[in-house]
Length: 81
Image (cartoon, rainbow, N blue to C red; front, side):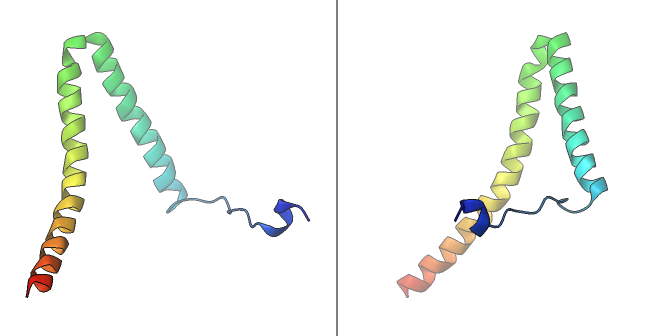
């Protein structure tokens, strides 16, 4: 019996909807190409692009970490008592 006979392959589909997925793909591509174009035209701007990129990524990550630390703090308080 072959593996393909027993394993179910994932079904291809959209994440949310066709418009959302295409907008996500095209939007991220446009932002990336714009950032690359700015850096190609003015290499001095790489610091600003990296600052903006790091700020956006850190903002998203800090929300996750702050909620995780809040939960850990609550758990430590319950263990200590």
